[in-house]
Length: 223
Ligand code: SAH
Ligand code: MG
Image (tube, rainbow, N blue to C red; front, side, top):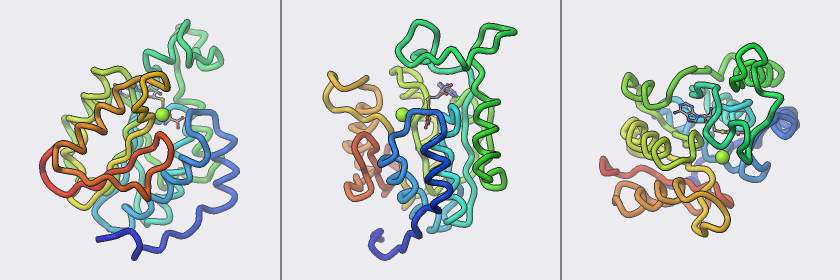
């Protein structure tokens, strides 16, 4: 199976504009690559798309566009309390996302509005909870898994071991923020990607990858 045989329709112009305008951590070129890979996967009919790390909905707009193009849906998981790196005092903290009632992060209202404004409510399904907990109760094979949740070692590995087994053979796994050089970013996503490659269960798809967005095709049960 090669992607060359699958015609991916271009992402709708109004959704490109929406995605750019949405708060988040997804560079536009990587978002467009995410859309293309997820559309390719969705069109296989192997199952829905699933994202770990909804945050404010930016990547979910690219992936929601892909779900629509692939006649499937996106499940997107987040407890909406922020990762360690999103908390007050850390690099990726945004004070506007703090619930003044409790002092805790709450990205769910912003996420919800982003998906509403993009007109994607029919194809983007929010799952609010801890990723590893949802994974333990999940049974539906996936055509596409996007790992962009907690970037510390423990949460990243929990996402890999909990979710990769749910990806259908022939489906795709995309990992965000893969930086082989520690000077460029944290090493957990790169560790997951390296493990996938050496496991023998995946073939990297260089054509579908873009910058720190790395795409792999699942070819066997190993992971
Ligand atoms: N994909 C987003 C960015 C995700 S940031 C974008 O395009 O902008 C990472 C997100 O992972 C945060 O919103 C955080 O709340 C979530 N997260 C971290 N650990 C999690 C866990 N164990 N379960 C569910 N969500 C988690
Ligand atoms: Mg990311």
